[in-house]
Image (tube, rainbow, N blue to C red; front, side, top):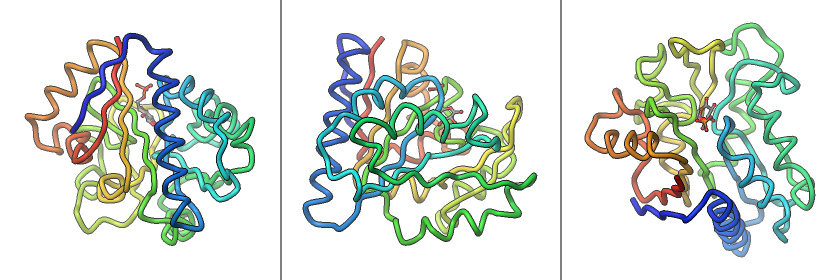
Length: 223
Ligand SMILES: O=C1O[C@H](COP(=O)(O)O)[C@@H](O)[C@H](O)[C@H]1O
């Protein structure tokens, strides 16, 4: 794991967006398409604002959320909604967004349908992750119903998780898919998340799920 400590969040967003664009560009030199997985939540918006202006062959890029809250894309808590409004614009509007949601009450009923188009796009070319102070990443929450299956080495690409204290059921890329990405970045802000990351490094993934994806990852941090 490599940690880059930035003077402020604005510089982090610009530098990280440049690195993600560079990783995508490098991948596209030797592959027809690239798959970019990005988080939702409160952190990545400014990175998306910078990344969407990158000069790239965006029509060859497939974008997907690392995880989704089980709400439709027009819901304010939808991760795909955030990605659609902040990343899939400007030059990046030419990319294709693959949602991790389909109209069904129970995600388990449509999981195979959501997973099928992802399989040919793996391994992920470029991955950006977020993390909570509880050491969850994507929707791999400590103590969630479904976490053991999502951490299993032989897990399928997607898992359904029911995190305690969260309003929605989640769908998430599993640990083996996240960890297998060719280029991996984690973005965190603030002292609380930095302490949580340090704590996670000493705990098993069942207690600190982010631990499962830290191999060869670059962590981008600003206060
Ligand atoms: O619930 C989620 O949380 C994480 C972290 O979110 P943040 O608001 O603390 O940045 C996020 O990475 C994930 O995609 C999201 O579904």
